[in-house]
Length: 391
Image (cartoon, rainbow, N blue to C red):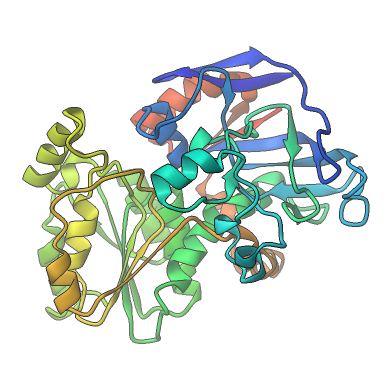
């Protein structure tokens, strides 16, 4: 089969690889019909996340048709059914899964030895990501083995296009969880840093959850236009002071709720001198992540407010004003998304036409074009916001 394969830093190729096979009674095989390139794939593309190995298959946003099931999956899935595959692999039985904390599953990370050393406790296994999260082959491929498939799936109906449903596996529930973690009230202003795909979903989720005002912060015109079309007030950080504009929009109080949809690769434009210094420290291995957005959120958030962090961080950050966060009484909520906790509700929103997540798609191509589109997505060429690949 064809698959997008990691060969090293900024080296993704479309290779012929061995078809997956059933390895366990709880496995299923799907024929992938659509997959996507995610912003967190770029962390692997840039080799900022450790423990990638040449030959690893990329991708954690995918959907398709079930073509084979293990003997332990027969009651949950059948051949021919259409499913979205969540990026988190979960057993459904451990203490974390029973609490709905699917991204913290205690059983599915087959490299628990690595995860325990780096994270202190194991995370769930993730598709198409680092060996810190199990080293599972990803879904930017023609076929995918789904472990623990009796739990790790989202059944979806016929008649709705792939692009509308595909993002149930990651960016839609990630943006939704980011907004839910804010505990949004009807008088709240929610500020969202980063208007990439997750930021766009967070913006629309905050509006659906009843925020009084949503403010979107970025510098790319196409992203800001998309955010404005979704109902947000926009701030272009390359031409305006984020702090001054937030004060103007909140009568000097600051937003009650702040969402970091940027993560470890804050653009140098986000914070002027401190992000330039962060880049230097990153290059010289004095820190692994660029945390300007975290600093700015702590500074501007209203006392008693909430910081929600769906943006991916991989390691060490420096010069975080934690004393300020403590004295302002801020609540900080983070974590990989517990995808299946939210998908029933989100699928209903799609079926009720309250939202169509396909609004975020700007580029659609064949899987073979994936290596080129990784570069287009990285460089934000051709107003690229979200890439969907078909097989």
